[in-house]
Length: 270
Image (cartoon, rainbow, N blue to C red; front, side):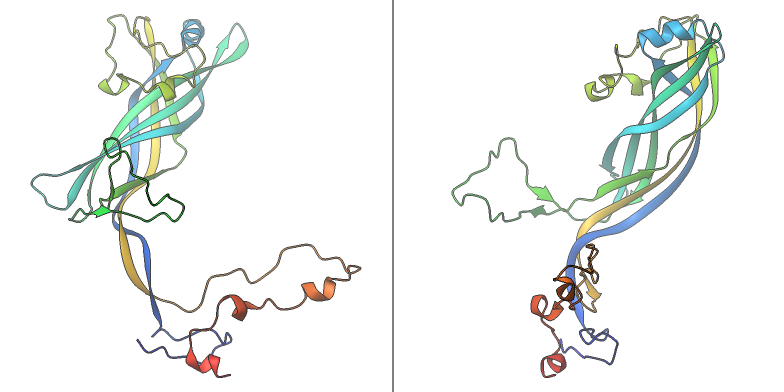
């Protein structure tokens, strides 16, 4: 492709006929979710349950997402579409007033969200060279699978908004939702004393949350984009002393051409 230079303030800048190929992730589909989750069960630590039994009006002090499990499955009768199931793990701090004293108790809430996104078709294996790797190295193929260009899902979630907290009677042992089965150890270890999942208490805490999230599905892609110049810092943020004999050197323009020679024939002739 012929590159054409044009008159700009930057002599290294070429017109839009100059293109380059980059390797990046291309977004195939996105979803914006705004959910109000009601009756979200909160499981507490054993010590937190003892505090709750003496406090019937807790309030939410803090709620944040500490982890998500994202499961992506191809839809069998809709080629190119994927069903994405997102399991949110919420760290919850409740404030209870007991005998005129404020006490904070910790708990965990879990919720699932399902969306359908288009991620395109095709699946190839991807192998990447490693210059630091021994040329005689052979990977353990029994435990290592090659990378692929299958789509991946990215979830961005804002800080959840606690809307309401309620204490409900649990005399008949209201069963916990299936999401609370087999809580990962990496989650349980965040709570001192573990989490009380016995569901034997006479009361339970339910939470109403507002959640804003963005979900996108993307694939590795090679794209051609218009390019003007290399993206490098154009200022030096180092402090300069006027009494320093090197101050003149610090004011010398950075020799960009030495590091990134111009790709335009016109500039090379100047």
